[in-house]
Image (cartoon, rainbow, N blue to C red; front, side):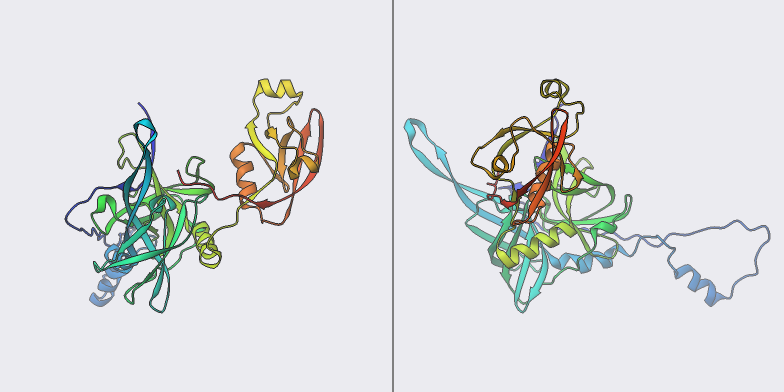
Length: 377
């Protein structure tokens, strides 16, 4: 069966009613075997013991949802694209997409909303619908296609910012809640766990190690909030793995630590400065046949498949056929790892590449320059 990877965004469809789904699960109970029956506790002590939550039990989910829902908005993006007609004529076709966003900061009456870049696309008109059903125009502050994130600015005194969480502290099987706008139903809450950490998908983003969750995420959830048991933002819901086009228990979110850093740069500079090495035109994975042709003994690293003579890499001594096995002391094992190392390197710094050429290994120092802005797919 054909496997499909989909951004969790809904294109030009709508439903009439809005719905908010909340969960309510009480604290768990714990029983301990006793060899002898203990004395009966006083009524007040027994009642207090029944109310005391067991360590690790779920919190009151409705309370978390009530805190988080006002920070999640619905986003409508309207634009246009050129379409080729017969005989060489061009036509402008209107486009419309919908998704979700999270209010991450508020200053006076101005709020900053984080969402996915693929929700925004090339839209010329952006509108957000707040949890109180008010509609407000939104301004694009900036976007980072490499992380698939975008930052919007909206004016409204009722905006409520969400609390940031630390995604590096997440654990597999920890409870999480997803809040978003699936199928334009309005604020919808789903519950699940962290299924896995550190997932990658170069087709969506080279720089993100995604959080995998089984909390229901569907088209329209893109840009919505993934929160922990304390109601803190730990991820921005981004894409789903599906063979049907809908929820199949596998969704992915950009970790909050990466999202927070990107949002800060977008607010300050209007963009995220991503690094690259001038002159390296194409790299390729190393396979046994290629390794034999290049007379290298190991399959570690990536091959410089094509290089431009006028670029910094060639000037520094890198040649076509060289195998890059290290970047600033870290091992390079695949093309995605090398691309990530470049994109996350500080622009203006000097990177040390470990090169393997036949049986020889040596270091080359190459400047990191700013990568061009990647066009949205």
